Amino acid sequence: MNGIETAWGGVIIAIGNQKGGVGKTTTAVHLARGLALRGHRTLLIDLDPSAGATIHLGVCPDEYHGVFELLTGEAELEDCILDHTEVPRLAENLSMMPASRRLETIDRRLGEANRFGHPADVLVSPTARLRDRFDIIVLDTPPSTTLSTSLSAYKVADYFILATLAEPFAMSGLCVAARDIDAVRQHGNANLRLLGICVGSVPARTLLAGWILREIDQAFPGPGLPEQPTTLRFVPSIRRSTVVARVQRMGLTLFDRLPGHPVTEDFMALVEAVEHRIAAAQRGLDEHEAYPASLDAVSPGGHHEPAA
Ligand SMILES: Nc1ncnc2c1ncn2[C@@H]1O[C@H](COP(=O)(O)OP(=O)(O)O)[C@@H](O)[C@H]1O
Ligand SMILES: [Mg+2]
Image (cartoon, rainbow, N blue to C red; front, side, top):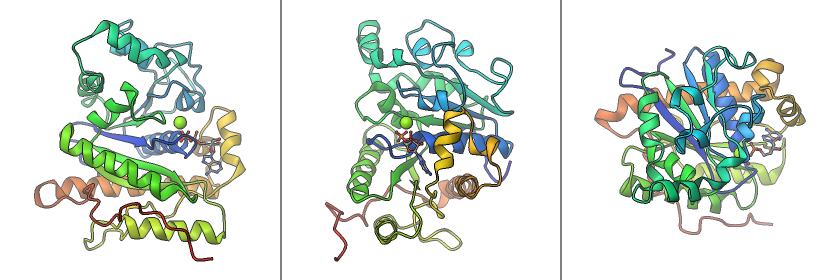
């Protein structure tokens, strides 16, 4: 299985950032599709009411049961998971649980239905049942840390990938997000680890982007182990290209539509790095924490403008 130990059950990776438009969905979809391509039984769960991941995979959000129907008890777990037998355009090894606009009302609905349950726990039972069936479960999260779907992703994930852009305020957003992960480790999910930072849509040859990437590398060093990367950033970053929006509009991934394109290769490098980091983190579970969410190196307020 390409180095990922899954004997103890499937691993759950959440893709997040409290900001919208930073590449979470594009990263989640390509990570899931790439892992499926490499033979892992993969499930992508779309937790965002805007249903970006669902649409990106060419699935119509209102046509199927999904996360909303599962969490409100309107449908059984089985009936909320799609694969190529229901949706022929879904690739081999790739299943998905779609989102829909109905998720916008999930907090109110859960509050009415289950006044004593904690909203952050809504995914605990379904994902526990799904771990046996999938090698990897990828969660695409909404740009919020207050929706129950977002909170619950932090609660059940083993690994967190922060998605960001190489833009001036990236560092402050990353610091907030990384502190959230630290807080979750202390108060809800001690197993959660920051697996890495995926910087998306990086313009070629701009000084500002280069400077921001170096700043991220300094603030988020790697585990400092032999043969492990020296930064938590996934290298290479994902380059900016108009083909991304083009394939998204077709309801396809780059792997399916443009397999040889340089951006597709960036995403494949991400997939391989994720495999290696999970393998390293799992090897390290006994001896040391290969990818702790330690923020010792992150300076408070971490954002500084480059010298003019
Ligand atoms: N590598 C890239 N090159 C160009 N555009 C990109 C790239 N990655 C993402 N985008 C575009 O950026 C926008 C936001 O991406 P998305 O993945 O939906 O972010 P989020 O899920 O964080 O809101 C989309 O319009 C998408 O097409
Ligand atoms: Mg999104």
